[in-house]
Length: 276
Image 1 (tube, one colour):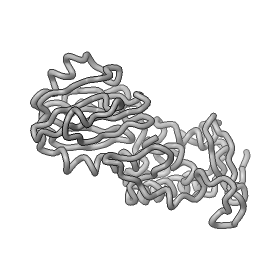
Image 2 (cartoon, one colour; image 1 turned 30 degrees about the vertical axis):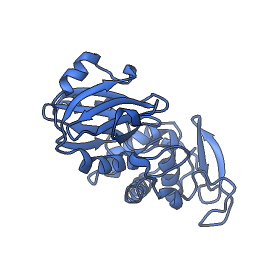
Image 3 (cartoon, helix red, strand yellow; image 1 turned 90 degrees about the vertical axis):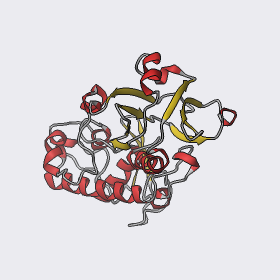
């Protein structure tokens, strides 16, 4: 599924293609993606021009004249530019007809993505946004900002880092890679970690996310960003999906376990489990 680096890549790719383009009309082919009344969605988007595209965590904010379209890609959401309605596939569910005679389509095989439309500037008041923690790649985010949330928890650190209310932007791939760099076993409980451990985790997370963004994210299985562009961070993975391969640091074989129901990859030598 798209995580922060993939969503940021989508944002960067879409921005030069959409800024200044006007929405003439909207066709909705699967209305459960839309989280406000359908007629209102279509009417309010009519004649709105794309002014900017920003992001918070894994949410895209399409900033228009009067409204902000808030889009979450979920498992496999993508955006494409099509020339005609004949070019649409069965998975193109929302179609924005633009004033340059092109179509911006929201494509989602699993149909899990969501769209909300709010008054411009009100996006951070949405319940789905308000509950999010600070962005992992926020340059102002310090270890002390998240230490207490981690320290009071008896959950595994893997599960804590996946909790978007603690810190937003990390998904399964990047948590595995972060914990490998920090040399922390993913099953280590939050209340067993020191402040120095949390500093190491945050430093590693920022490093991983920064590099992933620079490489266009990670293309694993079926996920690509818009226009079928593959990310290149999968070529930099240290542990994720590499079960049975030698660790790049110590040559021990990478193993796979389950943590909180999620497939988790680690080096059992570099990431030894700690306890209270």
